[in-house]
View (cartoon, rainbow, N blue to C red):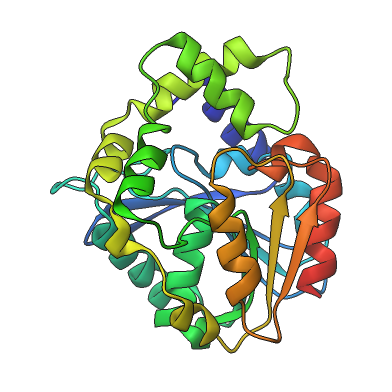
Length: 277
């Protein structure tokens, strides 16, 4: 685990968040949870590829003020969670999350997911609809792609040198940051981890969603898409815009990129809470 992640977790623990290890068939999953200070429904937060729960460091204290309970977790092979003994793959990730949901989600929750976390949140809603009260998604992965488009997309998540990592940082953020070279070092470290490498090697178009699956979801859904998102292709945005069920809402995010909590964390936290109510 990186020094920055360790410091973030230490600070969250000092604020009353508790670390917890939950055993699953995919290895031990690390979770952070806290009782909330508000009256809103419980909230589960799912991170993106190469990310971890500590990356929601700036969101969690703000969201805690509005909800009764807040939970974040590190996917297997990410953050402080163990690497599955058989390696990381989409089925292992999904199974581990279902096991956590069955044991930990004692009541229906609002589920937030960004990028890969959005796809995992959607899979959770498909397989455990009784555990998901509402879906809040920021630039969710999971839109179908052709084989060629999928290869190009995955290759864009495999920086081979510092320049490619800097480009990846620029594609994540709405605007270039002065920290881009430092962040690029972190990107190479995170996307070089075995769990992330395994997942990129084993995920394929067959693991994506269909329009029929998306349209079958009965719960309220909010999809937020940063107008400066340069990680997912435009076709992914249009898939969600055009195939959400009638009760869902799609919002274009002016001034936001692929990970909106990095661009304007407090603004985005307020948007989340308005949708969670």
